[in-house]
Length: 97
Image (cartoon, rainbow, N blue to C red; front, side, top):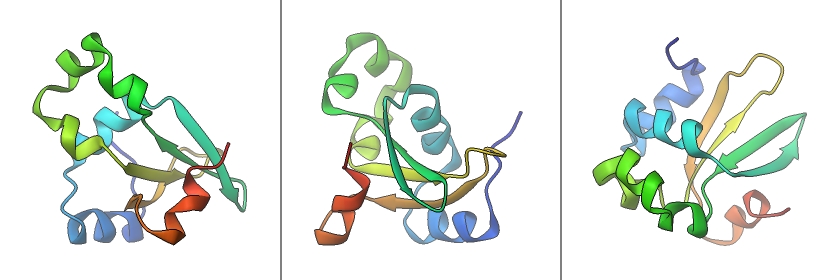
């Protein structure tokens, strides 16, 4: 099954230089799930998960690209709504527990 990206997510991933393979790695290994409103959740990888040797071997050279990357998903249909880099004041909402 391929990635199910909305048009907005596809545009944002392209603008932010995030290839679909990196998004797939994030979805495969995400361990942080944060509710962000409207029933959506932000998925990302924790530092501990990125430091795990098995995960690093699976991801390969994309470890640095996955650091501070998040995808916002609709849990009902699994569609990816947007892709973002978590930095700055606005990114704090994607770090909450």
